[in-house]
Length: 364
Image (spheres, rainbow, N blue to C red):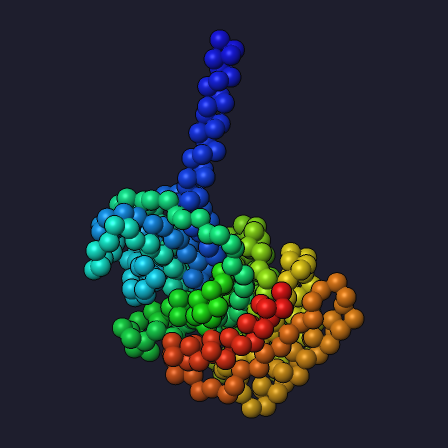
């Protein structure tokens, strides 16, 4: 009896291990998300994604938009390496979303990206009707870049093809798939992670002096990038490079109605330095790159560049970590909603960044 029981336990353990390996081969998860099980994954952060291969030419997704109140969300789809557009995930109960497959093939690969951001709640993936097949094992792991930022990094206001600016909800033009980070990453063939929140800053936000709203240093270590759901982020994504693009909101004038103090250079620099030190605690070998803002120009841009140079100078004697790099965007008049870059602007931004990041990658 004891021998039989041991054999059964050994078989179940072996099956469990093989089953888990098969699940890992079937689904690839990237970005800030929470895996409940293979048929329940919560897409949290901008451009968080699920990739799977399937056979045949039929596929539908079970998806649900979830938040503290009912509202819609968006996902972007990539089928067999081709962008297929956004899908609106309606509020309410789980719904079925059929995927149109025009090219007949024995096998397909589908990637579901969250087009909206963490502040919009989660998009829950609750399974698919497709016949899943295992992923092919890649020979080598690509380099990895994490993009930390605000609405620009989220891709806010960039997709105006279906819903014009000034109409619908504030997030109806979100499309993180076409934000500069994912565009650049696809061009460089690297894995990426977006840790971004619209309106957020390093020491204050677009319209708040860090009184009612959290700033990036407050929420970065939380999976959901907020204080309402303080589930810790596991930092399993090990980036070779971390890009930080924060300062637009610290330098902003707000809505012009709410009381706004003058820009506090000392607070901005001190918070930025401490934030970098926090990053080093999680990723001691990472290369950090600081970015200026395509939405900041003139005298404010001079202030921003001066601050970033002072931040870099404060690490001049740091021998434990790689020298911090600085990238300055060329002047731009954004054509998206709310003075944000549109998709074409993001492509220009990514093209500007490519030589800079390519050099950093080759130095690794």
